[in-house]
Length: 321
Ligand code: FAD
Ligand code: MG
Image (tube, rainbow, N blue to C red; front, side, top):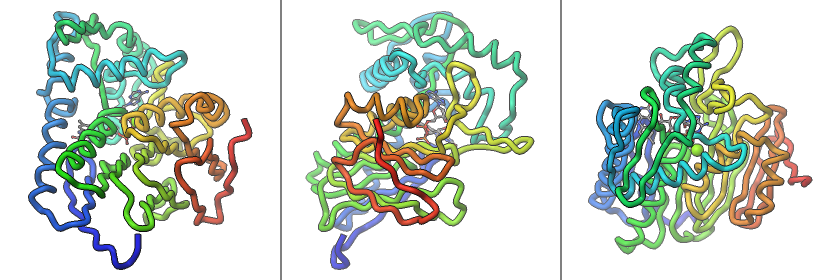
């Protein structure tokens, strides 16, 4: 952005995350409406309080189907489809394990192995039964829980973009704590920082110049705890019940819709760099930036953004597949 462009920033804390809205005109009232919209979705989708539409489904597990509103139903349907992809690391029924580990919340702990085995049995996404006619969701076993933590922010970021567009905004940005969605192209484009994993000073590995795109990052450094020298982070492997353990520190997805970015960061975590890049060859609309523990930055492709490396500790490589 040029120095003459005036940007107005508005912030809030919602969904346990710092929320940032950028506009090119001072409009406090619009910012309040955007934050209210996010809050309404949080109230429908949260699993961090006793009551929400998703919690209504969870409370009725093993007992009955629950009819929910259209946005909640369509998001759950999308989350189930992502969970049913072959070898998917995404699992909307991961809730019992998320609640047991409590990673990022008070009381986080390494559960006994027998608890993991018992809870894994309650995470089969096929047991999330959907009924399109009734818009209802039924969890067939008591103790099952839906958790939309890996997809809801992406969905909400898209709804904020749509709302801003409807309000006549031509340029704006919403950042829901790692899920960035943008509208329009300001002079010079949008520049989005790629965080350096585990940096306490907020350093950047590099920047992405984008226009009209979403940028979603998931990292092992976002929410984690350390126990006996080992790091336990919040992206769980649905196959083992433990945090996904591979060569990655973070994955960033550039895509049109933020919901895709949110889903694909999780899918890419499960696949790792090589399989991930191969899978993305079939999806030119989704591009990944992998940051590895070995300090490599691997771009699956870069047709829809420009990446600039800022940190010389890291090595930039393109996909070799
Ligand atoms: P992502 O990598 O996109 O997702 C990781 C999250 O997805 C995990 O935290 C877990 O919830 C879930 N998950 C883990 N493994 C898998 C898997 N294999 N498949 C699918 N999902 C998985 N945080 C608070 O501290 N307090 C709150 O009150 C709070 N309320 C929230 C309300 C809503 C509606 C949402 C969407 C989030 C809320 N959060 C809250 C944040 C939430 O707990 C997660 O930390 C956050 O959604 C993670 O997003 P991410 O983009 O950083 O990570
Ligand atoms: Mg995600």
